[in-house]
Image (cartoon, rainbow, N blue to C red; front, side, top):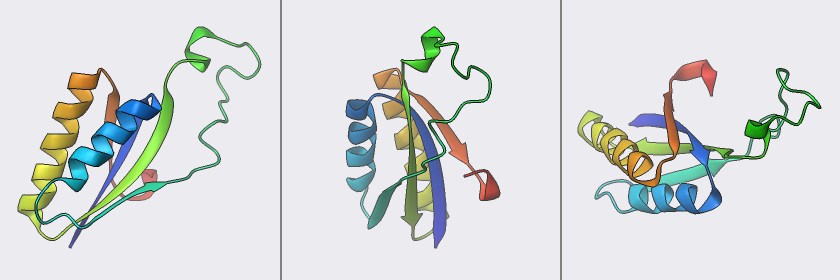
Length: 97
C-alpha cells in the first residue's frame, strides 16, 4: 500500500473538488483531509497583513493507494484537477507533511 500526501493551496471548493475526484478513482478507498493547526502560523509576515495572507488556504490530504499504478493515477488526477481549478498542489513525501 502506498501513502500519497498532498498539500493543496486554494479555496474550500477547490479542495473539495480535488478530494471528490480522488474518491472517484477505482481502487482508491481512503482519502482523508488532515487538520494541521500550525498551518495558519506564518513567520514571514507575522502581523504585516500582506496580500497573500488573505488568499488561498492550505489543505492537507492523505490518500492510500493499493499499488504504484494507483498511486501514479492519484498524482496525475490531483495535478490535472489542481491545474484546472488554478489551485496550488504539492506532493509531499515523508516527514515534510
